[in-house]
Every structure is written in structure tokens, then in C-alpha cells.
Image (cartoon, rainbow, N blue to C red; front, side):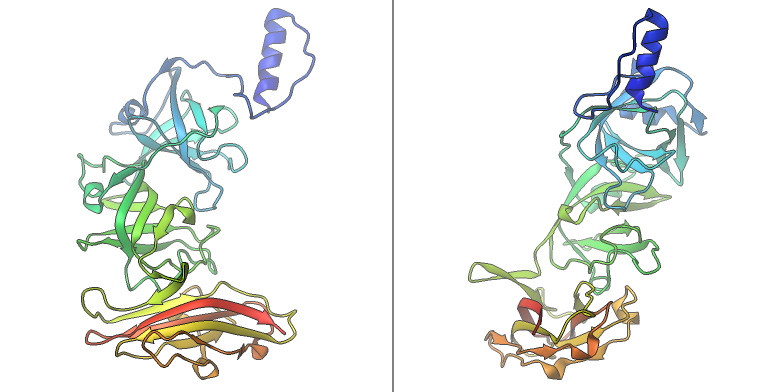
Length: 381
């Protein structure tokens, strides 16, 4: 029920005023239909939980800014809010994907909600977004706290002090064992854990829903900054991606004439045994006439050659997908970083939906080439 409409009925009954109309307008804050009561901080709200789940019976409210919403699909019936003191997860009675968004400042009326602990994650449950959450303004920002992986894994009692908060890690990258995969399993729509590591070798789990809009996207390579929400499962600290724009991993990207290109290498102060994949998005070529792939490539240093593959049945995991090797269909650079056009690599045999191509490189602990790719295009004659 529209909150303004309810409030108008209340005014009519008490003051005998005429109800002349109502309009839901998110450009101005809805009128509160529940008493604010005492205003407390999110930190104080978290401390209401001691040893048992409990329903809040007093008129209390917290103010906070939404730091993560449901728009990307990585969260469902869940949002996070944060104030100057702490952050907390709100478990909703219904999806609010068209109501409350990142940057909205809200008041949460706490009476009737449940403060609880699930696997060492403090959360506020039984939150009805139509009743308990009242938007105050929009377009607000919460700056992520710049921390290290070590900071996140130092506990205060049972919990990480950053639980439920927006953080930023710098100089991090996904582990070599994960970069050939995708963020989530978009095929079976199951959650996936991938590993983020820093320059000290410290690691942390990044957990992504198979329903996220970016679940089937190949994991970004390179080193850089990573913004996410902190959650906890027992003693394991996990990060939740809000959107891929929060990742700025560029260590695997080079520059050419002011532009950018993809770079694949197993050298970082020394060679390491690794396998790297660069996998295209899925394509529907069923309506094409004579599709073909074209790209520029260059390489240098002793090591194995880059391979080119294609599939029509991607499983969400490069290692379990059946690939067809089409390496010989392309023209490859002679080395010394000499850029070379691939020529037209025919995709005539793949005029259907669900087509993906991929570049694969395998390096060893004793040698490895650096490969560069640019202007990767699929065209139709």
C-alpha cells in the first residue's frame, strides 16, 4: 500500500480533513507512517544482538545510506546500509529492486524487525521495504574504507570490524587458478567462490551469485583496486561485488598508440607455471551470412605459442568446456612485439547461438612468452 495514501487516511480520520488525492513521488521523501522513536546508530543496533535472536519491540530508528542494492542480481531480498559508525545487512520480506538504490539515504524503523546472527553475520531481518524503510534523499555517497586483506581478517571477538561495510583493496588481483573462469556459474545459476590475492600473498574469498548479471563474465585479469561489501561466514571473510565498475584491475592491460590492448604473460619478477584464458562473451551467429573473427597479435620472449579455440557449449568453466582448436586458421606474429593481423578466421561452421571463442596461454616455471592482443572483432561478410 502506498505510504502517502495510508498517512492521508490517518489524517482524514483524526482531523476530519478531505482527502483530495495522492501521488507517489520518489523525488521527495515519503511521509513516515511509523514513529521514529529514539534514533540510534547502526553500531548500537548491531550491539542489540547478544546471544539470541530477538524481535525489536520498542520505537527505534536508524539512518543510513544504501551501499549495495539488488540491481545487479548479486543480492536478492537484501540490501546493505551504512552510517558513520558501522554497516549492516538488511534481510527483506520482499525484493525491493525498484525501490531503494545505492546512494539512497533511508530511515529504517526497527519496531517489529529481527536482529539476528547467521553464521557469525549480524543482520536485521523481517524488514518490510514497504513499511520499515523510508527514503529520505537520493544521490548520496559513502566513500569506501581503504583497507588491506590483513585488516579484514583481524577479528574483534567473533566478528571482523568491517562486517557489512563498503571497503576498497588496492594492489590486488585474482589468483592464477581462477582467471580462466567466470565470476559466477551462470549456467547452473549457483554461487561461486573465487580468490583475490595481494602482493604479500594474503588471500580472501569473493563470492558471486549465479543469478548476478555479470555471473558469466570472464574474470578480469591484472592488478589494481577492488571495491566490495564485507560479509562473514563463520570464520571466513567474504567479499560481495556490487557491480563490475567497482573493479579497476589493469595490470594485464597495456597501451599502444594511446589505446589499450590485452596482455597475457606468466612473468612477474620470474616465470611461474600458469594457464590463462581470455574468453569472449557469448554470441548468436545464427542470422549471419559468413561470420569471421579478426584480431591483431604480437609477442616476445621464449615460451609456448598462444592458442585459439571456439565452442558452442560453454559450461561456465574453461577447464570443463569442450573446445575446438582453430589456432591454425589465424596468422600469427613472428615475434619481437611485431603487430600482425590475424586475417579472417572463418566462423562459418558456427552459425548458431551460444558461440564463444577463447585465447589460451600456458606458461612454465622456466620460460614464458608475453602475448598481446588488440582490435578483436567478429564481422559478417
